[in-house]
Image 1: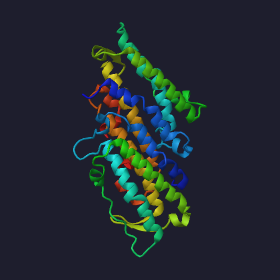
Image 2 (image 1 turned 90 degrees about the vertical axis):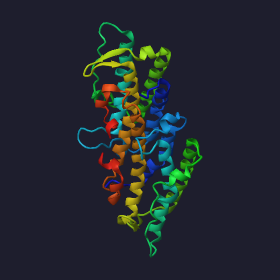
Image 3 (image 1 turned 45 degrees about the vertical axis):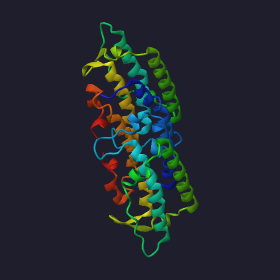
Length: 174
Length: 174
């Protein structure tokens, strides 16, 4: 096991800035690119991350920390962003993510979590019992996975353009 | 085919800033993490990108544009960074990449490439004939692939920590 709270936070606080550098001001051929039907563009992914700040990480951590009689998490809506991002520019979404993430991390810092608290459990609707440590490490890995996804989605725009170099670019076939 | 020079440049010019936001100042548990024997850490990847600026993209473009009798590229050393990064901090490497990339893009801009020039060919040591358009689109995709790789390598540090959530994180098993 590798998770340490301060190291995880060091990644979480960077994510909005990383995504801004990757995407803000880019032509929409990049930010609306996807990998085919039912796959997500960078624009869609930013909306998904925003919904996570509102509905997933901190709200679920609160349920665990409260240790009430019902510790079951509300199921996460993986499609909320198609509704919630409507009419918003990518720049607005990036600002919103930065604001929400800063709030989330301020809350997390105020909690001054102990190892004992990190071991507390909640109930995931599909997996059953999960710990706060697992939830927080998942938050970090989830950010990184979506950063990787955005790089991959964008790279694939040039799948044919690179000609024979495709053989040296494993990202094209992931 | 999707490649348009201005759109590609919009990605290339962002890469040093994206990598700085992802990595600069992070604990070395992140920047030295890898996926196992003979895989690359973020630190190693930055050195590889630096070597690409020096030895790959612009030098190969020059060979193509010159259209001399020998248009064969010098083989690229995929391990140069293990020598060239020695003794350098990650912060130094990120600065070096930013400087070299700015120089590369200044050269590219000065060339004011035409469609006819983008169709000119060089000789890749393994693939044979490749066009300047393929080389430049590969440069962009190569950046994006390594950004995706860094996200993936970092996410995998928490492969076990996330517990049952691993089933929802495809990045963990790529």
